[in-house]
Length: 408
Image (cartoon, rainbow, N blue to C red; front, side, top):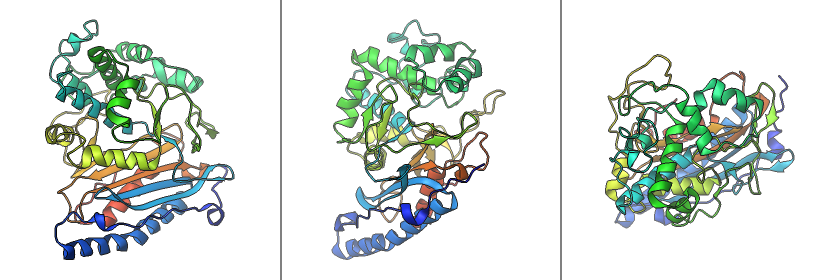
């Protein structure tokens, strides 16, 4: 394996934003000064962890942002976007599963407007879908619906994808792959990570509203959250400045930036984003009431599935939910933290929020994105390591040692 790690001294680039006095979510000036002093002291801690991770894992790029009570503590970009081009904090990368949170938030907002009912069988909108009379929107959103994940289907998806990662997959294609194998469990009887369930959820939301997911996502998520750096493309388009992703998923080291991501999520919610958009949106949706009502946000992040689920043959994802890992609506729940950790097509990312009221330092959100060199991955076999997620968790454990997220 050739070591093509970047020359660190030449390629490092960082953007630093100091905290403002708005960091303190307290009423008295003395406490505000203490919190601001604490935040300022953490800036070198974040930089040190990022630089250590960049060097240790010989990353090609590392971009991160840390928010405290919604205010920027640190924004940092290191490495290369592509050969000879420095990575910058406004670089676009594929956000993958982070958009699952947006789809779930969309379903919650539509529910509050009375356009859908999360606990009604989806047969109301998709009567021809097998199992629709027993499956609710909530089951699709919390991954208990039991539709087999097309991504795990070797003949129907894995081999065609590895043969040609530039293929375009429609939502109907993906659902057909899912339905080509029997259910592992009945609706609501267990838990299994399923991209297919969210593709179905997207189709249900379109049928219920008469609008496309692209229109719905812009109206309810991207526009109100002012996500000017986030774009939905059902093809391989990635706007400049683009962070290039590199992978050996097909057994050779190659640039995967323009692989077609149409297989990943519902059409209209397949996105590229910036580190700021990822951090701010996740913070706004999961960290505090406002974008979502108190009731809706509680449904999203409540660990209601702890103790639910059991291991099943042929289902690596199936297991009993615990305090260290359970699932809400479009988010992973780990201790008091809320996470999404996409890893695909040469892109690794993680965004985690410690919601308000769960730490003395205030609400905390950490977003990290990384790309790799050949030297970043010692073994090309699955599962690949998510060094962005490891970085986010190390920062979280340093900033909030009394309430750290579990390491994965």
